Length: 201
Ligand code: ADP
Ligand code: 5GP
Image (cartoon, rainbow, N blue to C red; front, side, top):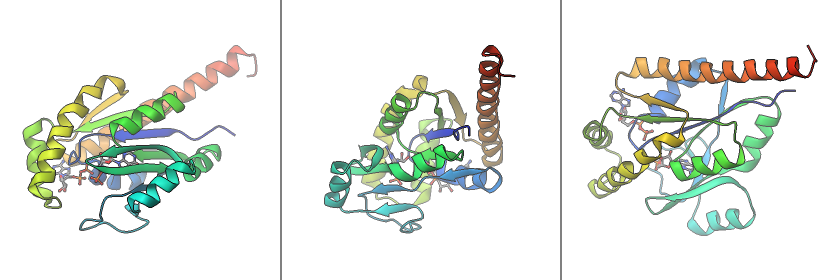
């Protein structure tokens, strides 16, 4: 059986990853990995749905037990992708999408070179600030910190396969679908070619 496709979606906090993914997943056959984090739940969060919420000690125990596919610290908290779900799904031919920040994405790229890396952002930093402030889920200090982080995250853009700019929401959802389809087609064509090359067709 062919392995499933592994897609990584990164981008500054407030760029709209969660909003766009929710729409994308209504139409696309992808499993969304639920991460573990040591940050405190915020309005709208749900245990086991948006995250598995852990104490720092619990998270560090999971690191020790090698339970993460990747993990990183962001804004003073741990975030990580539990290994078992992702590997089980991919090995069973299921497509998986990870919504993770850039350090984790670089770990995935190293471990799974054919993962598809997509970077999503607002058109510029001013819109990013407006969206983060408009979301009203973080204190001003945390918003400022996330804006600072965004300015370093954008420098990773060239490490990604695709850029999706989230201006108009509907268009962004379509753009994400298009990019994923392009990546799927490339993989399909390459696999066909490999078979043909080996004389297996
Ligand atoms: P992220 O998951 O990347 O942190 P969110 O999905 O929480 O970002 O989006 C941040 C805020 O921006 C939310 O309040 C969301 O409703 C809003 N938002 C997302 N996409 C758009 C868009 N295309 N136009 C206007 N507002 C948007
Ligand atoms: P938030 O606190 O807004 O939910 O997430 C902050 C950042 O952590 C976002 O950029 C999000 O993509 C990232 N993130 C969420 N889960 C993971 C994860 O499992 N691993 C890594 N490396 N980053 C994550």
